[in-house]
Length: 227
Image (tube, rainbow, N blue to C red; front, side, top):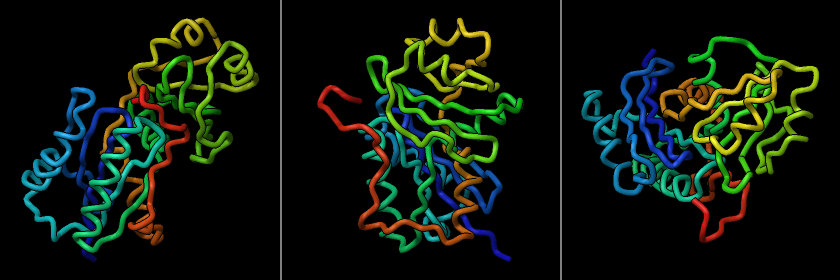
């Protein structure tokens, strides 16, 4: 059986990365570590991945995009590139939920098991894009934008062993570090290679997006001062 090649694109955090897999096997990843350079770097990262993997664009079987929530500008650029590639190559487009990608990295980095997983992405002021997942990647709280305060943290931490994780969440440090019932990890960055498992599963279930109508999941109205 010839295993399919997936090109995974992650731009939802303001950083960007691109990874290639064959089936569920990771092959290569290219990352841009400087923030807000998605527009001028994403195509170069894609070229780097293809060149170093010794395949051609015609070998690709699907494009996977991390579809939000997250940076409005990053999502918009990433989705436009992913849709363009999928359309030009006549291959499927796969939506991978950003919070599932974050949880996949957490599990590799941390290794511990929790009752509740709460990923967070900064949404300015004291807001964050967040959700609550169980170990089986089922949503207990659907993705949304919330104002994070003491009352909410205390509500979440009752009767459960929870982990709150993300990157650049320094504004929440006092709220989260002072709660003894919470494991708080502020070093979980997004990387395209952690999209592979979801992309692989969706490909073999034929869970593809309509390229013409697909839009990222913003979960917050865009304002000119937003990311």
